[in-house]
Length: 349
Ligand SMILES: Cc1cc2nc3c(=O)[nH]c(=O)nc-3n(C[C@H](O)[C@H](O)[C@H](O)COP(=O)(O)OP(=O)(O)OC[C@H]3O[C@@H](n4cnc5c(N)ncnc54)[C@H](O)[C@@H]3O)c2cc1C
Image (cartoon, rainbow, N blue to C red; front, side, top):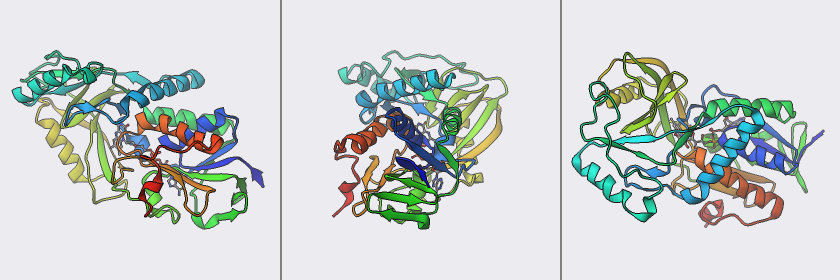
């Protein structure tokens, strides 16, 4: 029997941030992942956008989570000797004078001083990237190269003999008086970080997910090039010499299969303002673990305290994962209660 403190199921953003924070507290973990080619974390654009573009409000808990997440990824860069997090302005291209004026008005609100650049700019080549009403950018934004970080962190886990490639089968769980046994592993607890696949987990399938499939394209342009991220109905951001273009939102279809409809939808929306040939390089799909009330799902199973869940990071996993992984660690190691807003108990009658 192999003895560990914690078994973590899933090596996405949730499982990886949690694994590292537990290891830093000298806890022995094993992370189990079936290594699908496409997952939500692997295909995410990775944007850290402190502003909700629709209403021009601050993103939920931004003052608490942004510094924690940036510090976490910077520390990972030191540890793993590579760059994963990049500062990157995100430009919103205005669709009308009204939208331009609304941005200006919001940028004067003290709450948004740190997040919205007040100036209207015309930073792109109008011939190839139309923005007749100008644009402006978010301050303190950036992006995490999620795939690059997750694969580097997996190597770290392998080096520490803390990674296992396997499909976790729930029938193999044996609950004991003081812990849990899974195959040849004995642990105090299992923390499930399976993203949307928690809908198949018999212990947590009651959680009120409202899943959202998303598709993205890796593209390039015949003549156009730019160095910042752009948002106008779709986002486009430079990545490894190409551009990521996304994303679709589909609430009825839950798998990683790419669709012709998804591709056409992205090309049509980008084509409204990109006046250059778009060359498709790759097409991917994933399912976001979005929740009915748009808040993370964290907590212990009501009858089996050896089983926990860390999930529901929704559309903002990059910014939320490091902060809430810390909350899970505080619960596990110091019995600190979870914030009510994210505790799964909120859904118990
Ligand atoms: C198109 C798209 C664009 C996005 N853009 C952004 C963005 O710009 N910024 C941002 O912050 N967020 C973005 N997101 C959201 C972000 O990706 C998620 O919040 C985050 O990835 C969720 O991470 P997770 O670890 O909970 O889940 P996942 O990434 O789904 O990870 C779960 C892991 O568990 C494994 N697993 C599941 N079940 C089992 C099992 N039974 N056995 C073994 N392994 C298992 C899976 O293989 C997977 O590796 C985007 C998502 C999509 C789909």
